[in-house]
Image 1 (cartoon, rainbow, N blue to C red):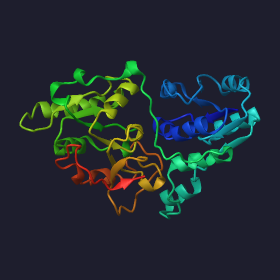
Image 2 (image 1 turned 135 degrees about the vertical axis):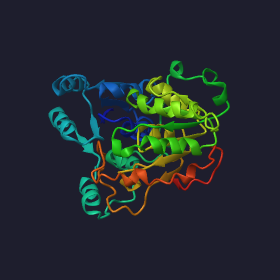
Image 3 (image 1 turned 90 degrees about the vertical axis):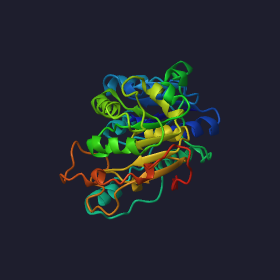
Image 4 (image 1 turned 180 degrees about the vertical axis):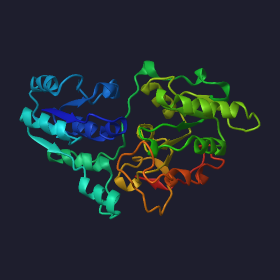
Length: 335
C-alpha cells in the first residue's frame, strides 16, 4: 500500500508530523510511506527510516503532479490542507483525508478572544487524519534523525562547553515570536551554565551583539559560544540533542528539542500554547505574559507588534531561568 503525506512547510510543522509517519510505516501492513514537501525541508527526511521516498515542490505544481501521479498512490493524507494541497489532491484523484486546521476556532480566539479550541495537541489532530488506515498512538514522541556525518562532536566546542551547556535558540520566523535583544541578554545572564546560541544566518547580527556583550563584561559568569549560522540544520539539531536544557521561542528548534526529549523552556509572545503546539512528550516550562487582552494577536506572527507596545515579550519575567543549569527538574508541563 503506497501512502503519500503532504506538508510543504515549515520545520516545526513537519517535525510534528513524524509520529504519523512512523505509525503508518510500522502499523499498516505493507505500507510504503512517501512525503511531499518543499526543497528546503527535504533534509528532514535524509535519515528517516520510515519514509521510502521524498518528493519536492521545486518547480510548478504541475511538475510535482506528474511525479506523484506516476507513483500510483493508494491513499493521500493531507497534513497541510491549503489551496495548493487541495488542488493537488483533486487532480490526483486519489482517496484523501485532511487534517482539521480548526481555522474557525483559531479565528475566534485571535479576533474575539473566545476560546473554543479543544485541548488536543496538533500531533493528535494529524493522527486523526490517518485514523481510517487503522493507526493508533504508539505512545512515543517526535522523531528527528541526524545523518552520522552531520553530528557535531562535543570536543569541537570550547573547553568551557564540553561538560554541559544550555542551548538558546534566539530566532523565530516572525518578529512577534522573538524576544528583543535586551531580553535575550537578560535571559543569558540568568542562566548558570555555558550557553550555545543557535539560529539561522538571519539571526547573526543579534547573536554577534550578544557575544560582544559578554566578551566586554568578563565579570559575568555567562560564557557564550556563538553557533548561529555556523552549522546546517542537522548540525544545530545535534547541538540541541546534546544540550542539558533548551531555551526557545515557539519555533522549529523547540520541536526538534522535543524530538530528543530535551527539557525545554519555551517562550511565547503573540502565539499561545492553547493553539496545541506545545513541546510534545517532553518536560517543558512555558513562559508567557498572562492576562494581556491583545494575546493572541495572530496564529502565526507579525513583523512588528500591532499594538506598538510588544508587552507579550517586553514584560516577560524570565524568572524560571534564574540560576538554571539544566540539571534541575520540576518543569510544569508535559504534552
